[in-house]
Length: 290
Ligand SMILES: NC(=O)c1ccc[n+]([C@@H]2O[C@H](COP(=O)([O-])OP(=O)(O)OC[C@H]3O[C@@H](n4cnc5c(N)ncnc54)[C@H](OP(=O)(O)O)[C@@H]3O)[C@@H](O)[C@H]2O)c1
Image (cartoon, rainbow, N blue to C red; front, side):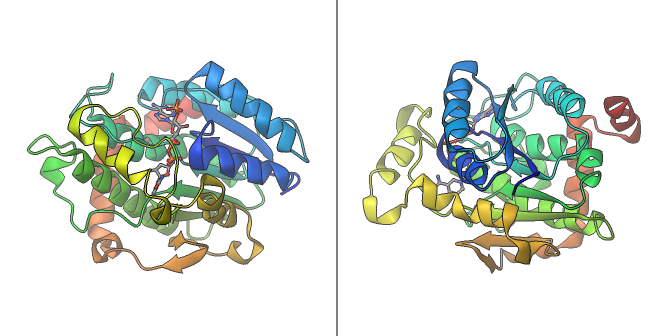
């Protein structure tokens, strides 16, 4: 990975931190995207110690805020003429239905819309690389249907349903992105770390908060974050995936996803709806890239 610039969101803990560290060990120049300066600096320090290539860069962004994602994209564009790999890893679960600063349900905003918006905003930098990859961290635990009238849990909310819906969004986005990028040198894949012991869900309060706390204590169910990161590292770096796009990987192997993920009409509709939710149009894209 020497000579490659790799952006990893949510890089200060869990799967994101391990992915960043492993790719730094392979020689990549890592850009850590974190929302907290203190946690981000500590992680950047560790990644720097693991790095066999250039020193990592830390960028601060709250991916729950669209204006912060725009600012992040401007930072990335100022610093880099090209980006070789974008790893959309940051994610969370929310015990109750809460709205982001943009008035969007937080699970949908962070897990689905943030990767959608960030990828679109820096797509020209990815296209400027000799070969580039967009890797989005999803889950084998994704919904098997999509109710467009309940994307934000406005009719019915439960934290697990909202999470599974957002992870379905990641896969539909990836497969549609792969179709849109045909004929370019940019690929799009989705991955799952599999059940992994991290701090995931630790901010959840009340009864739903017990779910991740109990899950994370069942040793035989979970592997460690370094193992969980392997599939993202594989998707980001393996030469055998140079031409592979529109696939989902778990344990470093391509897997089939739920039938709905292969429905092109659903994916196109979701793309349009996501554009609207992000205020993304040809004009905003031109302005963001100016
Ligand atoms: N762990 C599993 O079993 C599992 C299974 C399947 C898929 N996944 C997926 O793997 C990905 C990583 O999760 P993980 O298990 O490594 O959990 P984690 O340790 O909680 O890591 C999540 C990362 O996302 C960051 N993040 C959260 N909200 C953010 C925001 N508003 N802006 C910017 N960054 C934000 C967190 O930053 P802070 O530290 O500041 O909160 C953290 O760095 C997620 O997409 C998750 O859905 C995990």
